[in-house]
Length: 301
Image 1: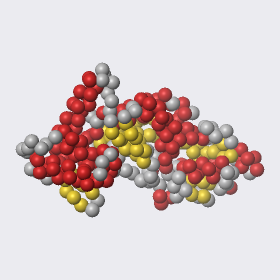
Image 2: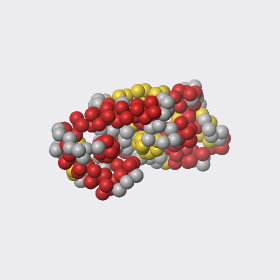
Image 3: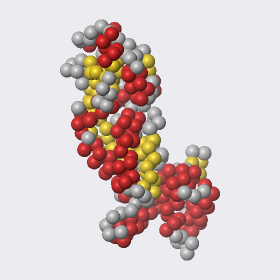
Image 4: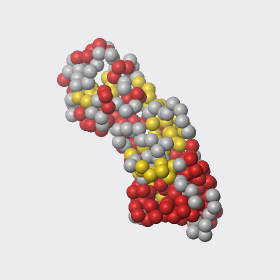
């Protein structure tokens, strides 16, 4: 590669934003500029380096082999710039930018979202995008910078850290349980309507747990949303398997067969290896790990 005088640090910022998101529009939003400006800066960088960094296709911008190599160089420069900023501000790194976090709806809405204010206080120059759609966001395609996952990738260029186990139980509203036949064993559950996930829309094996309770259970009401399931349970529509960290804040809910049925699942923190040294992503990861550790009882009961 040969750099011309037109090559600047700003060009690297644009390059990294597109490399991490794969989309001009998303990169433009992160950089608070226009789609056209990002496109122009990428074209200028490629001309300056005299090398093609991206393949353009209908899905967006995909790094070429040379682009993949250049990411490593650009991120080392970015890390050094962050360290310089930290030195200038007396060891208080003022990270700036946007981090996109993908997380399951239950963890995102019922645990993390209420704590976003605390995160913002600690990192006022960081913006957090929290994605909770019912699918696995691709870290390799830069659809997210970091993910909380129920089932970690089986392979690939990822750093995986188990952050906690969490307990689930069968719950029903006190009003519902008071008006229905008493439940003393697993077979009694078959006489009750269940609330659960839509079977062919379960995006992670860890959410497929009714079979662990009783193979004969068929949910009467199904939703891809844990919030909708919780609402139906609170409206006395039936029984539902819920995480303890969600149900514990609902005094109307009561555990069924508490001694006999205790399900355990896990949350993992997943990062692409390209993002391990990224200070913004590390700030989000450290905050999530510390928050979970400080609230361990909420997950395990």
